[in-house]
Image (tube, rainbow, N blue to C red):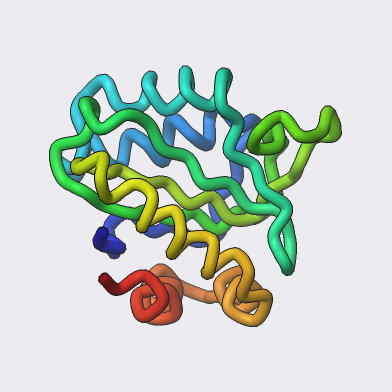
Length: 152
């Protein structure tokens, strides 16, 4: 799984979860990592299987969908100016979460899904790293902080 610089954005503002997910997912399509069906698949999966998680530092989301919508594996990150409302993964609570960072995954090989999610769990359990990502001034800084943690 590869973190892609062109799929990283810092300081974004969205009015809703759906707007955030569509905007981020369309970057994957525009960059050639996902099919045109990917954004809608992300939205539909989020409705059925929410991706918000309370992390060590603050809430995050890890959005992804089935591999049939993916052309090439990639990870994207959006560090938000202000959080948007997400539901908690596993519907463990009716209380909404307010992610500050949205990670989006495009996983081509389904066998890579579990190892990739395990790496993501290590990231979200690293309070110091998350706080560094939140404070990053540029996409390049996010990439430099996150790439070592996501290497295969």
